[in-house]
Length: 166
Image (cartoon, rainbow, N blue to C red; front, side, top):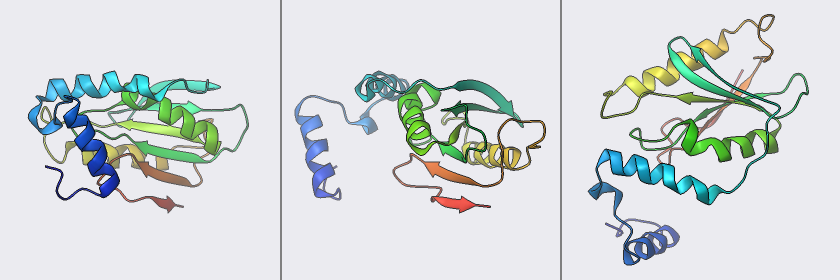
């Protein structure tokens, strides 16, 4: 299982296994989701946002984090990790708050549909539809100025590379 991992990650995974932590590939989807959610306490506290709300864009749930009351903040679109079977607002809340605070940008997290309940390409379709909706927002009716934005993924396999979109 650990043969092809980088040295630092390999050591960490071997320590987890030695300490009785289950290998995710041997867990059920429900166990993986519960474990992922339970691990969020390790993130500690996170900054308070000026504004935070959940919305639905083109049928896809998103959560918006605005760190300050400043105008004309840049926008970061965030795709949570979880290997397409787990993750969401609750598992990534602390790191999204940190990202919004440290980057002084409005972060919009897309909550895509998860497998196995929804098969490929459901998650990708959700991400695409949400980004297209964000791009087409009328800046006169929304307090978020969508002139340019950064796409960020928490996926280890980086299925959507980081890029600046204008």
